[in-house]
Image (cartoon, rainbow, N blue to C red):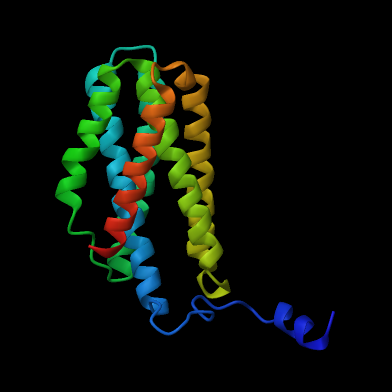
Length: 194
């Protein structure tokens, strides 16, 4: 290992130091992260609200309620970060209010396993999303990185809970999962920008 490589490893990584011309600034990067994560947690909470509206008395309801409570705690954190960091929320919040509830209710109308398949698909994308964001943050954003890593671990537990409740046995699991993942990735892309 050369002296330059040793010095490079010893120096703390700063968020955005490797950006190229035209890339978002450090501040824009952080604002996008907080904006999209707030939108995602809001949308997840609405998905669970829709599922509970249909499955509120089912065997899966306690697990769904537990996941909804975790998403609410995440949302509360991002509500505070929006104010603390002076980041505007996405202008698409009204869309996610309706779309999240509709996705949750529609998946639940297909049955408990389909609702869990929806959960598995969303949580898998969000877990990967949080991991990617955490990898972009430097030591100057260690607290935000730790929050994203903790929330990503929560999303992984939700995905595992969905699998444990028979998500993969849902009729049309592969097609449902693929559609929900595509929709989730599109929502992420839009919420970062709008």
